[in-house]
Amino acid sequence: MPSGITLAVVGAGQRGSGYARWVHAHPDRAAIVAVAEPRRVRRDRLVAEHALEASAAVADWRELAARGRVADAVLICTLDREHLAPVLAFAALGYHILLEKPMALTEDECRRIVAAVEDAGVILSVGHVLRYTPYTQVLKAIVDSGRIGEVVSVQHLEPVGFWHQAHSFVRGNWRRADEATSMLMAKSCHDLDWLQYVLGGPPVRVSSFGRLSHFRPGNRPAGAADRCLDCTVEAACPYSATREYGERLARGRHGWPLSVVIEEFTPQALETALREGPYGRCVYACDNDVVDHQVVAMEFASGATAAFTMTAFTEQADRRTRIFGTRGELRGDGAQVQVYDFLTRSEELIGTRREGEMTAAGGHGGGDAGLMDAFVRAVATGDPGLVRSGPQESLISHLTVLAAERARREGTVETVRV
Figure 1 (cartoon, rainbow, N blue to C red):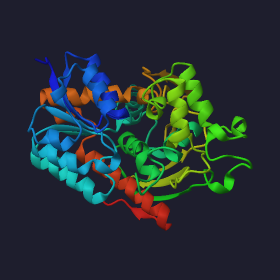
Figure 2 (cartoon, helix red, strand yellow):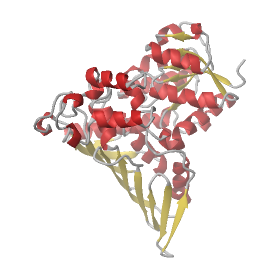
Figure 3 (cartoon, rainbow, N blue to C red):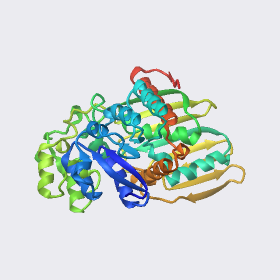
Figure 4 (tube, one colour):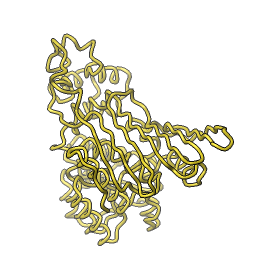
């Protein structure tokens, strides 16, 4: 019998498999006992990694739910638009729930999720992993201490990275708002949630501007083909799928994002994927419509303001933040924090325990592990206070994202109504 809590996995894609790897590394604290995943290769892989019986794996989460409560908790890592129904079903069965972000894509669905877990009396942790990084804890402690005085304004940058944009938001699953969700919800709900966490409350008013500027047919180079494998100008294109994925395969870098493109890590499998699948398409010949750059301006109840920038057109890098207070200034880059003191006119550099990059590729700077650690402890002890991204906090940050996206589409200043 497992010595820790038991977990079921619903959705064994990149996020579900990543959380399951944490469980595999901590067998004294948790064990995977069931999985629901429609893709057989993904399902079989998790079964093998966790030594499950074949009967513990099903293709449809509904079949798993029909068995009743077979685990203490469930990791719901389905596609963004498929969160509501499994949450309602598993909450009603008494499962504690770790729900991958975003919790849902509309205000009504978010509120229904919160009501369901609260009515059932179960723990909900939403995958806002940036709240759990060692870096965040150091930075927040400085802000909370009053060392830089009262916060007056904030600048926060999410450098998505040119190849990440091309992979996920031009060629990939999050390229269209009607099939997935807005760029702000898919990628940057992390950041608006993080700002709310660091500053101790949500904004009260937001405005936003952004558009799809570059990854459009009108910017297609002369002579470009529909697929990179056939393109005569591919060698001069920074968004070449042939080069991006081919170099990763050659270097043995088989994790994300290559693991999204192919299941077998061979040159033949990659050529087939680039020839036939979505990830081999020219970035100027896709059906994408989400923005490639966006800014959000926020006003908080204290009068403090914040400016958030998301842009595709960067190297792959950590998020960067500057916080301006009445007694000092703070600068953070995901690895260390610099504090400048107005009184002494001195600067201190504070390093933090780094566990990967503050990006998806780097386990979100230790946030993925921190989220799992907190959730497992909360379930094991029955203490929901160990979760930093619970239902009410996550609801408010999602309402902020929805308000900001309305402001961008409609050209308005929106009030965040909680």
